[in-house]
Each structure stands twice: as structure tokens, then as C-alpha cells.
Amino acid sequence: MDKDRIAGSAKQAGGAIKKAAGKVTGDAKLEAEGSAEKSAGKVQNAIGGAKDAVRDALK
Image (cartoon, rainbow, N blue to C red):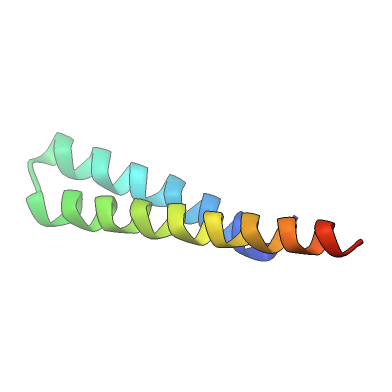
């Protein structure tokens, strides 16, 4: 598994927690940061998946 997939998954989880905390506390800035972090994690995870696919195809 590519390191980008691991880091992306962690970023997604952290973003989801931030988003939920922002929603509960009514902090719109924290909620927006969480959403952005979650989206960035999804992209990073997808990049890691693509790297894995290329690596597997070359084997």
C-alpha cells in the first residue's frame, strides 16, 4: 500500500472529526477546515491508489 493512501485516509478521518466538531460547536470556520481537509485526504488517497495500480501493472 502506498504511503499516500495511508496519509490520505488519516487526513480524511481528521477532516471528518474537525467537520463534526465545528458543526456541534457552531464554528463555521472549523467546519469548513474539516471539509477541506477531508476533500484533500480523498484526493491524496486516490493518488496513492493510482500509484498502487501502476506499480501492480508493472509487476
